[in-house]
Structures are given as C-alpha cells and as structure tokens.
Image 1 (cartoon, helix red, strand yellow):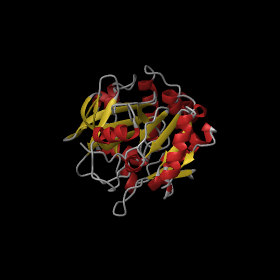
Image 2 (tube, helix red, strand yellow; image 1 turned 90 degrees about the vertical axis):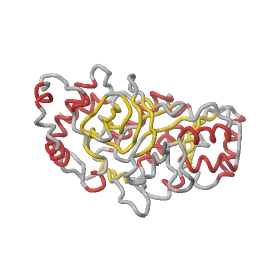
Image 3 (cartoon, rainbow, N blue to C red; image 1 turned 60 degrees about the vertical axis):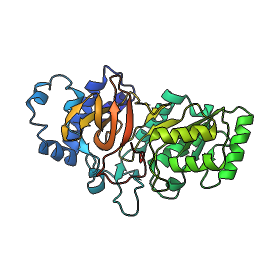
Image 4 (tube, one colour; image 1 turned 30 degrees about the vertical axis):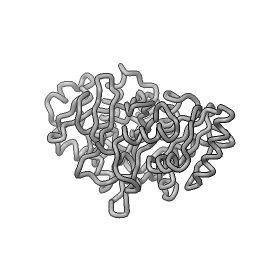
Length: 334
C-alpha cells in the first residue's frame, strides 16, 4: 500500500491530486497517532460533510491540518521506524527547534530533484553555488542537503559552498560571467544582502535565489525591499525565491515578484487567523500546506506564515504571525 501511494505522488496530475490526497490522508490517519489524535480533537473525523464525501475525494479544505509547532514537541511520524535522517530547524539559541524524522531520504531527494527540474531544468545545465553560512555551521539542515546534492549533480568544477569568503565568491562569479555559464546562486537572505553591499556586480548569466532568513543580522524588511536591494546591488531584473521548511519535504519556487508556484504534489491553502478551522482555497490569511511527499510524517501542515493564495494556486508570503517563534527561514515581514 505504501509503495503504491509513493509511486503515484510524483506523477500526480491536477485532476488526480484530490484522490491521491485522500489516499494519503487515510494512510496517515491510521498510522500517525499524533495526527489522528489532533484530527479527533478538532472533530474533523466526526464532521458529517467529510464522512458523506467518503466515496469521493473531499474538498481539500476539509482535511484537518496539524499545527507546525507540533514538530517541536511531538514525534510526528507514521508508525515506528529508524530514521535515515533528522532535519532540524535553525531557530535561535532561545527557541525550541522543530525536528523532522525522515524515514526514507530517497523520497526527499526525488522531491527536490523533480521540482528543481520542473522549474529550472536539469542540474547539470547549471553551476550551482550555495551561500548558506548559518546553515553550514550546524547539522541537520534539509536545505544544505538539497543544495549539496544539486551541487554534486551539476558536475561543474566551480560549483560549491561559500561560507564567509565573499572575495572568492566574487572572483568565481566574475569568471562564470565571462564564460556566460548559467549559474544559480542560492543563498540565505542576510548573506546575499551583505555580499551585494560589499561586492556590487552586474550579473547577466546568474540567477540569484534567496531562501529567506535574517536571523537578527539586519533590520527586518519586506521581501520587496530585500529584492530591490539585491537587484540594485547585483544588476538583476528579478530575484528568485525558494519556499521550504524543515517540516516539509517539498519546496515552492518564485521566479520573480515573490509569487510562488508549487510542484504538482504540493498545494497551499489559506485559513482565517481568528478561526483556524475556516480553510479556503484562495484569499488572504495564514498558509496551510498539503505536501504529499511527507508521506511518513504528516502531509497536512498549518504553518505560521501569513500570505495570499490566488485562484490559480500561486501564492505570496507576507510575513509571520506575531506570536510565532522566530525561525531561521522566512523571516521577511510585512
């Protein structure tokens, strides 16, 4: 049963998404004790409208979504297993970090590789450079694993991580630009801003992708302000963005203007801030994520990010709930 679901996830079509989502829900409600208890608590399992739709796929906004904070206090897993990997949020020294126990790293690898190819093509077409100093300085980062594997898959001799060597990064980018090599510079926000301020350039062949993350290094800014500084400092028409988190195994991408698109096995919905059970497929509020790749954890996550979801499924991230903990990613505020 598990294998059959996994095989369907990464080939799911828009029409199939509700049916596969129902399958994943039925598996997780049986196997994930924490999720089952939460669903029962919010009376979703007893919701007549949900049960009446049992023969068909219910509406996506009728599922119970687990608060993302549960990953700080509970083992959010299906069944019992020895984890192949532990992903941990960065947070700060004063916060409790989320922990995501990953049963099968191959699922995460398939998720980020397939999504990257959908948005950017094969990794071997790029030189991939990671500017992720705070992530490289700690263990258990899902972002570092993703970028590391993209670097390896690129097979370009100049691909690699840069910690604090801005001068070396500057020289590398100058060389890549001179050879017109398509390059992806993926970095945490504060490091990209520092680099752009110290080494202004006019990049023509380089795509810059920010992953969020100020970590108290700079004053909080809107994404629009951040992107404007990066465009001015690095000569860019657009700044790309990645939307991911420790608790998920999938990423959404923005190719400009802060408008994110999901891969086919991921959807973003929106809930009312004052009524978390009022969930909508579009509108402004707090974001809920369905990530089918989270098969052995929980695919229905109520985040603490405020945003707008549009009718076509694209979305913007505007900031975070005022009472949510500071996290390593997505610290851009309204």
